[in-house]
Image 1 (tube, rainbow, N blue to C red):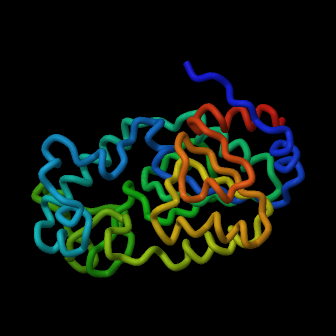
Image 2: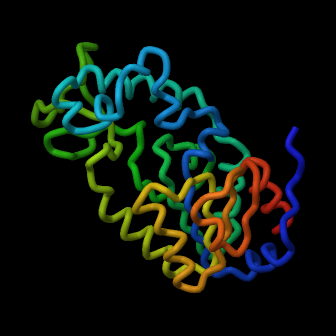
Length: 247
C-alpha cells in the first residue's frame, strides 16, 4: 500500500494563496486507472502494427477498417476504466479554488467523469466521433458493422475525434492552455513526461510568467530541475493528500 507523501508546508500555503491554478495532466494519471498508454495499447493483436499504421490520416485512408477497429477496442478499455482518486482530487480543487484551469493530454474523458467541469483537451476525446471529410462532430449514425460508419450529412467516413500523428492540435485548446499557463500563479504538472510538444512547453511558460511550478510524477523529467516542488509518487496518492491538507 502506498504511504502518504509529505507535502511541503510552503506548497500548501502557496495553494491557499493562489488566485489561478493551472494543471497539465498526462498519461500517468490515466495509467493509474488502468488505461494503457498509446504504446502499451499496442499489445497482442496490435503489436505488429506501427503507430503510422494506426494513428495517422494516411493510415486511415489506407486501411480505415483497421484504424476504426483499433480505436473501438481502445474505447472499450476506456469504458471499463474508472476515475481514480487523483481525478477526484482535481475535481475537488476546481470546486474550491477561485480560478482553475485543467489541461489534459489524455483522450479518455476520465476527468469529466470524476466531476471536472472545464477541461481543455489538447489531443481530443476518444469517446467522440467526427467526420473525416468535414472535420465536424457527429453524434448519431447508422452502424452497419462493416468498417467505419458513414457521416449522415456527407457520406464520408467517420473517425475518432482525437489528434493523430502529423495533425495540428485544436487551435482554440492550445491557445487557452498557453494563456492559462502564462497567467496562473501556481502550475501543477502531473503524470506527464514533458517530452511531447507543444504541451511540454506549458510548465516552462508558467515558470517564465513567475508562477510556482509543481511536478507530481514517479520519475524525474526534463522539467524536474526547474520546478519549485517535485513530489515523487503516484498522483492518486499525492493529490488527495494535497487536497486534505489544503482543506
